[in-house]
Length: 249
Length: 315
Image (cartoon, rainbow over all chains, first blue to last red):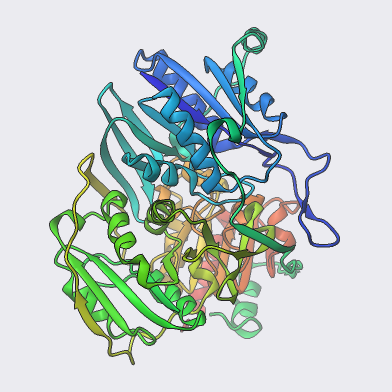
């Protein structure tokens, strides 16, 4: 069974971003870039399926500038077999990414597509669901547990009220949530091996997709910062202030 | 201009998230219709018809809509889409699961988790865990939008007298099957809508210790939440999680206990009206935005807090 995993290169989760002085965008120059944490979890899950003998090949895809090759090599160091870079300088929106992935799914014919549930830069949480719709495949989002065989995937999802379990007939799209697994660290030998694994580059044009954005970003701002308030010395003082000053109890 | 809001409900009652989405819908101008889809959900539709600002309720009932599978709901929403300029849903796990599927079928962009509306085509949404706000304009003929509930007030539950129109159920997708749900049952207010919340972090040490928070929650009529660390450690179930990828809430009072204040947690609560932090580490980042900070051992402070609350009459 072939598994396709999509991984996005984003500003590292620990970096605090700033907006440019003119408000035209976020200043990402010189910031550390990493694989989207949810996508690392997706790659790890695919590798575990291969280690369990369920998946036979893992193809990892990343869309964006040439730097995304690092994301692909990192995924291959974890255990993906092949990488595909969809190279473009266009700022990609989820709709465009879903179309690019659909074109690749039609070529590669995987049984399962794994994605992180959201990217920590745009926080959109859309691509997996959009891709599933375009393919007319079943979807399971926010997965915290996946059991897959050649025909079915049983997925437990984290929802607002607790947990929900669905059974999907393959092929299907699954988006993964934080508690699905803890990704392994790549070992140095595997990092070296990853450099030799196949990495193919394609473009939106060769895939027949127009990646033009539908949304125009008019401006970005930082929300007003909260200032620190005061320290209280004990619970009694806290309660007094909450009642008489803040008037919230 | 006409707006369709996909209502969230449990077949009996409309959920709080829908009321805030209706407020957002009303800001767009134009008629607001509510779509109530489910199984034996007439009661929910009747409640929906009373919401202030709703002009029409469109009700579809069928066995295969019982479990809100996106594969079934999306084609239904798409079949109605042509009459609307905007399709809205709350940014809950249901709304987030469904709406991108709708957007893709319509070949339009989705605008996720809007926190403000500037005009019928311009919206503000958070990115980078809410540390940045982006104002975006959509050129698509139909705007598909999910609405962050904590950013809008709740529409009144009375005052509306909408007609209820029943619709044909349409075909069911048959490659997904609902197996079951495990929901947290609680007498306490629901976390997303609670006026007061007390949350525990890794510092709580165990699930058992959350009883200390529950005792205080009961005295305050508060909901109990948690940081990601506490959920990962297995102290409480996932639906307690407040944060960038958990629930984003904005209660009147948020008390963070044993929570250090990582960016991703702050993303979920920094719009709270009053923030209290209790932590033994005075360098904890949470103190940088807490209105009231108490540096101390939570195992000592919490019982004292419980006593102090007994001394006064809380409303």
